Image (cartoon, rainbow, N blue to C red; front, side, top):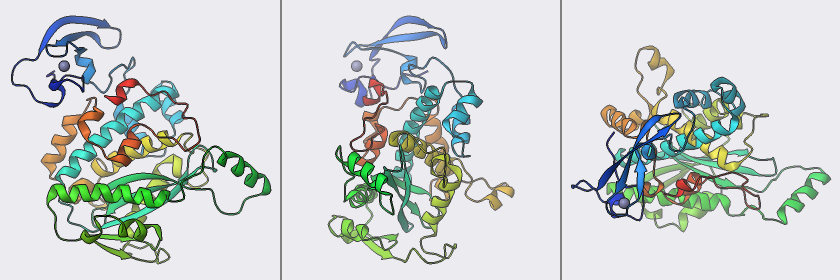
Length: 369
Ligand SMILES: [Zn+2]
C-alpha cells in the first residue's frame, strides 16, 4: 500500500505532496483482526502511523462488508435488521454507516468537481422527523431535472406544527424551554445550498444563469433575493399541487422524495423505524445518496437491456471518471481536512444534533482530522 500523506493535518506532509521519501519504516505491530500491520514515522513532525491509519477500518476491530450495508440501507433495512444480518452489534452497524457516509461525502465532492452542471436543478424539502415527532425536519435536496442526480443535501429543523392535543402542546412548550427550532431554518438551509451552488459555478467558470425550479414555498425566494448568486440564477416556481407525473417540472425531486420514502426505513410513512438521532439520520441519507447517485442504474427498463449507467453518468460524469473516483476512495479512510466541505456538509460530517438535545453519541476524535 502506498502511503498518501502524513495523517497530521498540521504537518506540511499532510497537504503538500512530497517528492522525497518523507517517512521512516519502524516495523510492525500485531493486531488480532488484520494481522501484523506495518508502521511508519513522519520525518518532519515525528507522528507515527500505520497502513491501517489510511483504511476505512481504522481503529475497527471487526471486518464488516460495506457493500452489504450499502445494499441494505437502500432497501429499507433498519439498523437492527442489519445487525442481525451481519452478525454484529447495532453500535457496530451505526459506526460503519458513519464511515461509509464520510466516503459518500468524499465521492460526492469529487464527482461535483467533474460534473458540467448544465441541466436545470429542482429543489425541495422532504419533511420527516428524527428522535421524536416533536423534532420534525426538512431534508432539502437539489436534484438534476434530467438526470435525477442528487447535487446537494441539507438538513433544516422545523417547529412541530399541525393539530396537537393539550398534552402535546404542553410537552412542546416544555421542550422549547431548552431551545426552539430556528424560524428561518429552511431559509438558512437554502442559503447553504446556494452557497454550495455558487462555489461550484465559480469553480467551473459558468456565466450563463442556472435554472433553479422550486415550488411556491416563501422561504426560497427570500433566501435567493439576499444571496450573491441571485443574478446567476433563473428561478422558476411551480405549484406543488400539480399532478406528480414525469411531465411535472418538479419531477426530479418528486421522484427522489418518492424513492427515499420507499427505500429508507427512517422516512417510510407511519414507520416504527424512525431515526433516533438526527446525525444518524443524515449519515443514512448520505449512504443512500451514495447508492442513488453512483451505484443504482438510472432506469430499471434500461437495466433490463444491460444498460447499467448511473444517475451520475446521466448527469455527465464519464464512466472512467466514475470508476477512478470510486476506486480512489474504495476501502480508504477519508480525512475531513482534505475535503474542504461547506457549512451544511460539515454539519453532516460531525453528525449534528437537534437544538436543545444532548447528542448522546460517541464521536471518535479522528473524525476531526
Ligand atoms: Zn508529518
